[in-house]
Image (cartoon, rainbow, N blue to C red; front, side, top):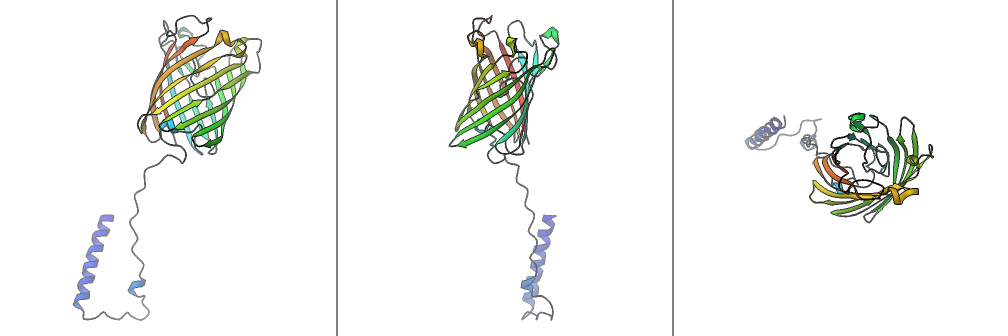
Length: 298
């Protein structure tokens, strides 16, 4: 349509030029007619829409993203966690789905599994394989929470975290409240994120399983290329009252690739207990897991 319009315009202009040359002078404008100069200009061709861009303040680069998603943005992350531990390969497989929605540019709501601050833990989310493959029920834990970013300046961001944590749904429901602080510092192309948090058990407190838990996930990320980031995960977790007998320090290395705007794919290999309390059996490399993930945003 645009090409035909352009051709017709050229032909019309040529005919008008020829007619003007054939006349000694321009014919007067008929009475009541609008001057030629007052004629409405031809409509400009409609511009081709520009490709979608990341919302302001939320870059496509993995390492440079803020702690909370952008206002109005929905983000879903689907991890598939494969147990590769000694004598328990693929026993079981977990799917700890993570869903986030930005209410404003500072406030997000989330539903996730594992540590509310975002790190994947063994046995979180949907467990595939049944009791014969070490599953304690198909679906037995979930977190509902919110995160508010109250400072974001000069590369430093701070946030507050609050979540209702259902550590176990059956046979006995164990409920806790998780409070924490998110900290992220970005000096492109590197970022450092630390999310210390405390889970406070509210029922079944006679059991150590629902006592206060400390978790402090740490991630160091490098944006190696516009579409590719690599990261190192570590931190510490354990029961507060028995930290010396229950702490564990994992280490994992992974990568994320921006397949297209709004879609990431990646993987991570982790040793869950590189350092651990003496009460845990096995060697430092016996507890292993591989996480494959897809994350989409719109």
